[in-house]
Image 1 (spheres, rainbow, N blue to C red):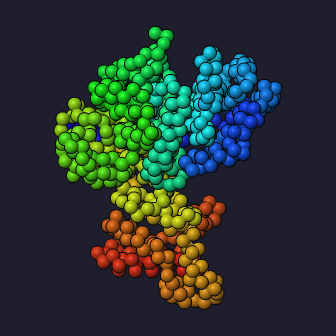
Image 2 (cartoon, rainbow, N blue to C red; image 1 turned 30 degrees about the vertical axis):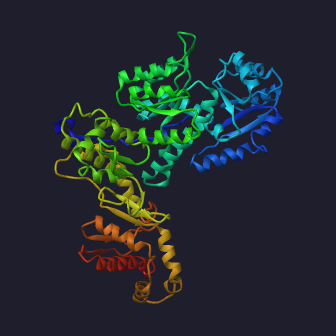
Length: 581
């Protein structure tokens, strides 16, 4: 059965996170009378507020806001700056603000427009009679700048949805809700949660650049306000839905009015196609809890004081966020918990068969991988269901092999930041410190990258094309060693090489390296070469190779003896920088 999946020929392509979320909102035009604009924030510092929101969530590219209060000012700005979004706050007094925005929309059809209204009875009544078709969304301003971040993210998600799903299989959360006030409070809550989660899973990335890119793979949130819109989105993206959160009473176009059970009918239609996709029903009518049990959905009471807390908890438990928890299928008690891919790999064969079976037959593992933006493994494991492969041990092996392949691929061709809990037999190349790698280090990293991009190297029988496991101590470690031990005076004097070497060997390397070296010894069970990698080495215009000393140390069972030899070898290389030749 295993050969059917040709695990040995399985080749994961790396996800190009840089190709995701390419369409952004950079410039926002805010049309509001001065008082409303001031209300939006006690002292009008909306840019700063949004900037702080963005940085706290590790987001980049916060948008710039331009505020105007009349139609003429708006048209002047639109003529000179290209805006990506227009937010309009209709005041309570004048009735023409809707007409103003409609007029602007007729001139600039391509720019999405959003209405942001203060919440009051008068406004609600007025909105009921207005034609809102020119506007993308209507939101209710409850005095919180989180809402502005969610409006921007919601529209960015919509702009990038189709491309990102087709590109790598990004997942989406479908929110079905027509109550303006409700979705205006649910969305900020949901976005904050999803963005915080993506901050956490981005720590699986191997360096800072990868971490920010990886956040682009977070699940998107899509808002639907009618039955037809919701089911249309479900049908189009059903293979990429992490979960559905639905209200019960909302419009059905064919009836032209609200249907008191539209959400229940939506759940029934979805369950017909997918017995396992997580569903959450929210309703202010508590009798609807009976339907939730029928369609295996979670229920949230909209009247509850802690509705937002309930929502976060249920989304976290059911949509594959957070730690993966193996449960006893009968009691649902927690048996084991894993935080990352490495822990999942280590525990796979120890989880009791019935618990393992419970999770794989419900797609839990692939959903967890999807929510953490590990698309290649998730895509591979998803079609291998219990029905297609009725053998628990074979299943464990497939998942284990897939994780190993994926981790090897992720580690190849990347200069990872060395982390003790992360460096293992699948790690290839890591750096300690933030300085430069030097020529030889850079050359090895380059070769590693070349090998990664040529899967044909995998095809040789009984041979592996790879670089040796490499750790680079960056130049800042060298600078620190020189400074803390006051070595420059002796190093730059005219004394013999032996004297310089003696001084260097007596000096002390930074303490934090000791644990790092022990981790390295645990992984590398072979002799170690200690080589210099100078900044001038391998430069095209002046060969500089072979000027510094290289030391070999044997692999011993006595780790402290190895530590002593390794430290001496490093100090010896450092000393040779200042030798005569």
